[in-house]
Amino acid sequence: MTSTTSAVPYRRPGLRALRPFGRGPLFAVSVAMLAALVLVALLAPVLAPYDPEALDLSASLVGTTGDHPLGTDQSGRDVLSRLLHGARTGLLGPLLVVGVSTLLGTLLGVVAAWRGGWVDTLLSRSMDLVFAIPGLLLAILLVSVVGEGLTAPVIAMSVAYTPYVGRLVRGIARQEKARPYIEAYVVQGWSGWTVSVRHLLPNIAPTVFAQSAMNFGYALMDLAALSFLGFGVQPPAADWGAMINEGQAAVLQGAMLPALAPSACIVLAVVAFGVVGEGLADRIAKRER
Image (cartoon, rainbow, N blue to C red; front, side):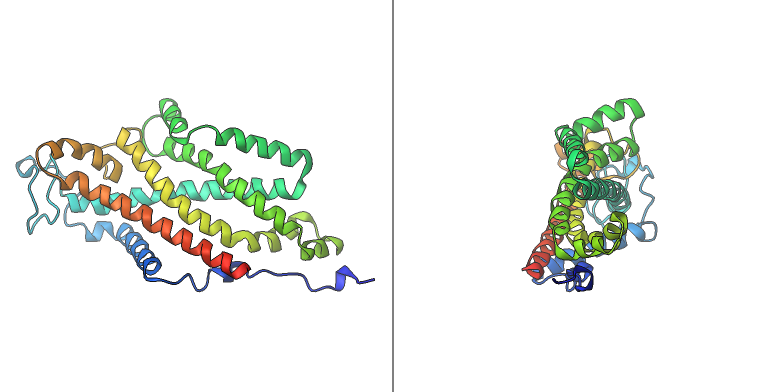
């Protein structure tokens, strides 16, 4: 009889599956765009030529000039400066949403897959219940209680995104748990917590990481939509969604850039995150074949 304790456990590539990140010019351009976006967000106070909240009514809706490459809005604020500072709130909110939802979703998914039985049923039904509640509606309800700003939308979106991660993790964790190397560790007397943390989680991390990249883009779009509707970041703070809302009136006056520039930033960022997430997922799938 073959001893399971002496068998060499099966090890998937783990985080090594993310190297190299992918192939193709579109993927490379998307990674470069996201790297530039992060750099811009970090260096916004240095790169911005003007205070993003400084009013100058005498320069209202000035077109593109040497002093204002993207013009100004109705209040005379420099659009480029507001775009650069808006990248900070544009990334901070989704980062918090993805971080919290990934942590909670991974925990719930692993526990459900590992314990099975009534624990799996309870956690799965709970995630299905939350999944049925629209995230934007939950955010609007929470804003009415907590108040306007970034806090309520981040909490609501974190709750709404947790079932997406939890269901994904539960599925791949159940597949991973059925592999012989997990049984080998259990037979050797390793606790479920130790096996999950040291071996199960590292092997499912690449897939979770790829999904998180796509979730980041979705969260960015949802939070921008809430700001556009007036439930997120409030003026005069620079935020892409709020800038689109403020720029609607300028469009009627023939000034397109105050609304078009932040709209383009949101679209490009969401597409870039989607391309990177899909690229990572495809790369992981090829490694596992």
